[in-house]
Image 1 (cartoon, rainbow, N blue to C red):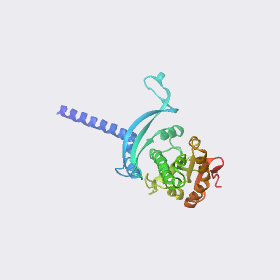
Image 2: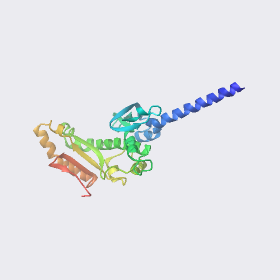
Image 3: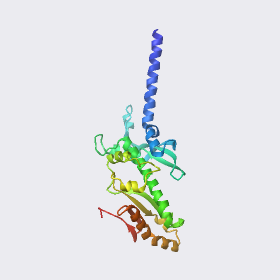
Image 4: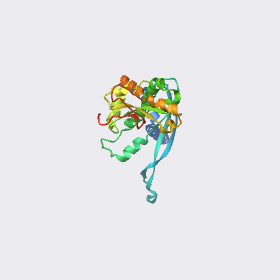
Amino acid sequence: MKKVKKVITIVIFLALAAGIAAGVYAFRNWPLRFHSELDRFFGEKNWESLSGATKESLIHTEYVSVRNSPELSGNEPMRYKDWSIGFTNRYGEEEIWEITNYTLKVNHDRHWLLSPERYSAKQAFVQQLMDISFVAAGDAVYRELVCEILPENEAECLRVSISYRGGNPEPGVYDELWKEPWFTANTATAADFIESDVYDFYIDVFAYNYRVEKLTDREREHMMESYEEIRQVLEERYGERAYEIYFDSDHCTAYYGGE
């Protein structure tokens, strides 16, 4: 009887240990921990976790304590996790994006536990989704507006994305953004961001100099001549201050301090 009790105790202990280990793994593995959030953002059965990798920061360090060998303790490159997520975008194309806990680790290194600037894991996770939606919504503007005005060679010089004014958002902004029903990878639009009260979002149109330099003189001239047309269409569709454009120092529009 004692042996049976001992075996049962060992089995319970091992099961408990395994459960704790599985819980810790799921807690640290964002595709598992935030599975339902990913379902909502990308669409159920429209995404998959392709891989995960541990990386070392080239900039930030963290203090690692070795209890049994204090002499080995010290600062080492900060280790963080990246997860590759594959999904089908609104145009039926396959994309792969990376989600990382790097921002969370840097934020926690800079701000103590009760700091109002300290992110929760959910807030840092939503920030990663926000970056994806910025590109997705900007890509829709690129396809539906820029590519209708510029030929392919010239359009490829531009990057269109969503950005924001006013510095990095407070952690609570990510909570508010997550409450928005339109905030998903394949439904969020530039208008959704601009018209929301969550933060001061705008459309950012930027020309890469190294690409512009590869255009012929005639292509470059035509692209610059199209600046005003693009600006006017953006203003008509999205409103004043809803965009900022930079082709070069003579063809740019930016708003600062509410002006």
